[in-house]
Length: 163
Image 1 (tube, one colour):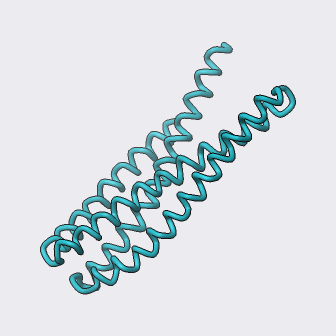
Image 2 (cartoon, rainbow, N blue to C red):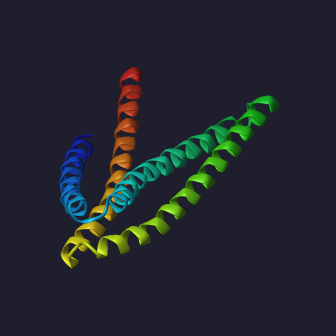
């Protein structure tokens, strides 16, 4: 558990440093680009954050749903099985829609990059690309770490309850 807390602290520090890089890029964009281009840039950063979180959440819900279906396969009534199947189908649809949104964001990324190339130096462009890539990576790593901490906490509680 201490290792997970240490990793969480490290991820928070890395996220803070990455957000600082992002603020530097944003300032440069805001100083140089046209207002509509600034809006496209800001929207792209926000959408990248939101869709990554959405995909992670839906994927986790899907995993829990599949575990629930497997755990109740032998004991559930047909009505319960049908209910779980319907919920899973809804999750599949939501996940597919989120994946489509991700593809659209990736396409927008190319457009945003072309806009930014007009205003940013090669070093600043590298900062932007690193910022966006790290943003996604850090969201994923933070979510995984938080899930591990929650699981470890549940396991500790269960162990304490049995003692």
